[in-house]
Image (tube, rainbow, N blue to C red; front, side):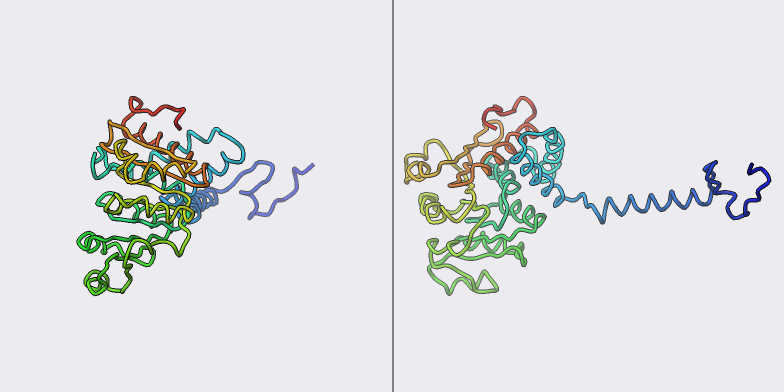
Length: 294
C-alpha cells in the first residue's frame, strides 16, 4: 500500500517502523547521557561525607517510623566508609579512648556541639565532622597551652572560649575577647545537640553535667572507669539519667566512655548501634559486641 509512497530524504534515517537512526545521532545521544550521568554524580547528587551523614540520619528516621528494614546492610556500608575515613587504626589506647563513641554520637545527633575541654584526638574529630555536617561548635578550655594549640581550627562555625579567673591573661590567647570567669556560666545560654565532657579537673565534671542536664540531647563523658563511680558524686548524678550507655572494650581502649541522656532514648540506641558497628569494623568479627547491647 505504501510501496510507491515517497519519503523525504531527511527522514530516511529516522524511519519509525524500522527504528533506524544515523550513527551521528546515536553518538550525540551517548555523549549527552554520559554528561548527564557525570553531573548527576557530582553536582545534583554529591557522594561526599555530608551526603553520607544525611543518608545515615534518614535511615534512622525510617527505622523509627517503620521498624528495621532491609536498608541496614546499605547503611553499614556507608558507616564503614565514615569509620575508615575518620578513625586511625590502630586506635591510641589512651588519647583515642573516646574516639569510637564520639564519632557515633556526632552522627547520631543534630544541632550545635559544646566541647568542654580539648584533646589531641577528640578536638580534631569534632572539628572535621562538624564541618562536613555544617554544625556549629563551641570549644571551651581552661588550659592556655591547649587553647593556643587548637586556635588554628577557629572559623565562623567553630568558636573558642577561655575559662579564667584573670580576664587580663585572656587576650594573649584569643584575638576576640570571649571568656568565662568560671565553668558555672558555660553553655547555659543555649540548647545543644551534643555536649562533650572532657574538662579538668575531672572531680568537678558532675557540676557541669547537672548544670547542662536539660540543655542537651546527650552527654559524651570521657575517661570513665568503674572505680570512679561512687566518688565525686558521679554515681549519684548518673542515677538521675534514665538513658545511659557505657562503652569499654579492652581490645581497643584502656578507659571507658559514657553517653547519658535525660529524655532521648532514640539517640542512645543510635549511638549504641553505631558503636557496635564500629567495633566490628575496627576489630573484626572477633571483637563484635553482644547484639543485645546494640
